[in-house]
Image (cartoon, protein in one colour):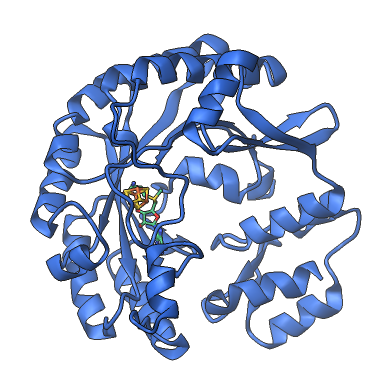
Amino acid sequence: MQSTERKQDFGVYVHWPFCLSKCPYCDFNSHVRHAAVDEARFARAFAGEIAATAARVPGRTVSTIFFGGGTPSLMQPATVATILDAIARHWPVASDAEVTLEANPTSVEASRFRGFRAAGVNRVSLGVQALDDAALKQLGRQHSAQEALAAVAVARAIFERYSFDLIYARPGQTPAAWGAELKQALAQAGEHLSLYQLTIEQDTAFALLHAAGKLAVPDEDLGRALYDTTQAVCADAGLPAYEISNHARPGAECRHNLVYWRAHEYAGIGPGAHGRLDIGPERRATATAKRPETWLMRAESLGHGVETDEPLTRSQMADEFLLMGLRLAEGIDPARYERLAGRPLNPRRVALLREQGAVETTADGMLRVTLAGFPVLDAVVADLAA
Ligand SMILES: C[S@@+](CC[C@H](N)C(=O)[O-])C[C@H]1O[C@@H](n2cnc3c(N)ncnc32)[C@H](O)[C@@H]1O
Ligand code: SF4
């Protein structure tokens, strides 16, 4: 059996849309509110949306749950417990379910980790971002490197599994400096690290600075050198990339993110959450209202905050499968592509990309992007999807 044909996981993504401040690089659905957030009210609305979603896709067994943000570690543990209880009331939850919560690594948030563990969270993903105080300041972070590493140590003591994120290809960063920082991070890492190249996203403070010539980011060659350093240092440490930006010891991959990349089914709960639900013969793409207050009003009056709910066409499903699946080191099953698209991948294009060394076929028939192809992944996907 091909690995992508294994029994499908079903994931539940829960979005907590609030942050203490907005980081200048971030375009996630995150909002700063100066008044206190009424968590009990939001928790009731989350529970309502979970019930409404479960009524549409009953009988699934939940294998992964992910609290993302925003900053979910700002939630009270009781809020997390209420949401997890609601999920368990409406779907069976596998006894080995992975339950991840994204946390910002401040001491205040680390003090809640025990409460999150008691509520049922078994994995945390910490946004450390850098181990250099000047870089953290430039990234607008609210913590020092030392405070972040202290939060990592608390996570290690409390949770079975933890991961942390770093952002590289920062202004002025050299491959040598990044290599040294990454080695320091690996000494504190458990089984998993997410390593993202800084991207300049539209409508962020960094985009304004960049457009004004006040923020210089590495050019393509330097970006490539930083990427190569990342691969070499992590592979040496036993944490190879299993996805373009994610590294793990074999077997310790984030199962929730694999649900997305393997194009399995997931529910999106909370403001600005996306879902993919298999209803009858269709795969439906859902999205909820992004603004927290709009979502809350909809959820309270309609029982859910869904604003978009559309069936995907075969070609949309096939494109999405390529876009997500080719990010993975394991690659994609061409037979599954053919079933989704109703036609095989174009053999001429595959052959050309293979000749260029950008893709290869594994012994079990998976098509995957090579190490040389990953830096030009977007072009590879565009070529195959055309
Ligand atoms: C939802 S965000 C953050 C979760 C959490 N609020 C935090 O800041 O730690 C997930 C991750 O995306 C990464 N990220 C966000 N914007 C980025 C950008 N413009 N470039 C690179 N990485 C980015 C950061 O590493 C961040 O930890
Ligand atoms: S990076 Fe995290 S803390 Fe910063 S604005 Fe984005 S979601 Fe909020």
